[in-house]
Length: 239
Image (cartoon, rainbow, N blue to C red; front, side):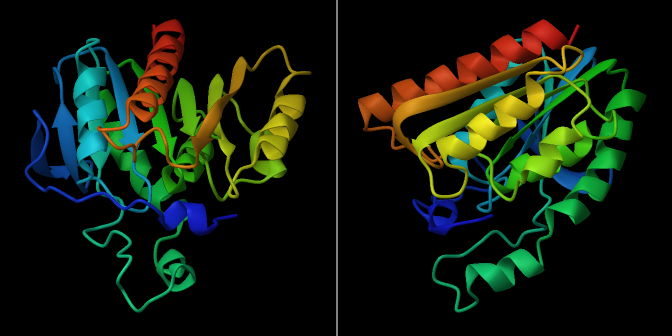
């Protein structure tokens, strides 16, 4: 499910942000890209409801690229991120931004990465984007998955995952509370063929990994720890 946590702390969007570049068509999608396009390993980052122009998300993409990955952040919201001041409520926004439609749009993005020579592809999703990543993980489209403060997920989704998956959650989260993440872990644990990692970050709220305040030292530290965990997962399985 989605909750009020999904719509809190909206970032000030910046279409020109980041050290990479925005391309008009990557696998059929407008996207922010960073890193070497010739890399054999690639990472797709999928945004929360606030979209691919979020400054922190682009900074994360740039940092991931520094590890040698080619990084793509597609605009699966098609220029229509959630607007807190929009009279349309979150439910109406979700009806027109179904993660399963983004999943279908992600397939050509992954195909484009393969055409560029990428042999190992991982995906990480934040909140809304985590649902898209899980759908990819169900059908062998990616070699590794990372979910950060996920939303819209059910136990049955996790049962179908077919690649190594890391789930990074918040202690304070109405959307995916620790109890739900522990259920996910219980589902994954009996299957030795699917590597998994579940971690609940203490004292942080849903959205902490990408919607943190740079002036909050503790928040920045927790976000950096989440990034480190994500990179450890990709380094382990994208090879």
